[in-house]
Image (cartoon, rainbow, N blue to C red):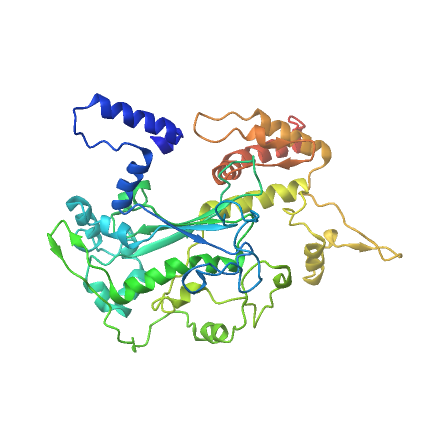
Length: 445
């Protein structure tokens, strides 16, 4: 309730004091917010604060714990306080240890049974209903048979994305949560909020790029430790304890892949001299043959090189990018417009769409012919009026009309689902209206 309703610590203290007086003597109600947090700590819901370089070079962790300045860019670890009060870190990573969260999945008998559902209750009939039905899962099991023999071993999916926790009020601050999802669970549970395991909270004002690996270090180290040694935990469904540790032997069998990756591994092996961080001297990172800038930190995991499927494309973000590019090209929005000068030159190189080629003038300048898909100012105005007039059922989509800015010809603040609605429902209707206008001049857009 404190988190959901944004209660202050003082209001929670007052409520706990009231409950303590209301209930019989010697009750076990915590006396303060601090004591309540200590209880949560014992449940395995704690997290670690790890200082980071302000330029994303390194973490002040393990060998760097005692340093006051970044070993790469020499930036100060702490804010300037002129020797007064406690030192305040300039950038802090929040790390939520994974092992206690995995153990908690087996504390409940019902949940422990669900964690073995894919092995004991899943219908294996070559129909893809669960990740365990996929070729990637089966290939992984064939490569690591000892891991596959123990159904209590956990298979995890990792996902991340950036978001602004303050909406549009502060565009200079964003967070990048890294979330782990246990795929052992049946499909009707795996994608539910209670089973999303927040692992990292990374603060960053902009795209992290290759510096993302700097912040992944604690998680990758823990995953490596779990892979090599496992962890001992209580299985409430069988009332036993059992550790299935990695035997330490190298996998020497050849992998059977449809697409060989030896060439990619050879290229990655030649990538050297990668320097992390956003220090001004490190802005232009050299690209190594053919186009690599780094080797992902996930390659340190023993099983990562042999995985057939290393990442999935986020459909909602694909729709968002597609929607922004289509609308940006129609409206001529800078940065989202794919009808660029270089695109016109490519048409000439391919010897197609001659009516769109750039026309060069005697003075060396060139003229860019108007494309049929580019809206005129009047058509653009009609498009915005149409967006403002669209009505939606409650909870179906955000009020897209608020995102329309006719003055600068932009659509701002659209979320992924709004873009989904835009390209699936609104744009087809709007384009039909536009065609009707061309035929019968019955609509403005």
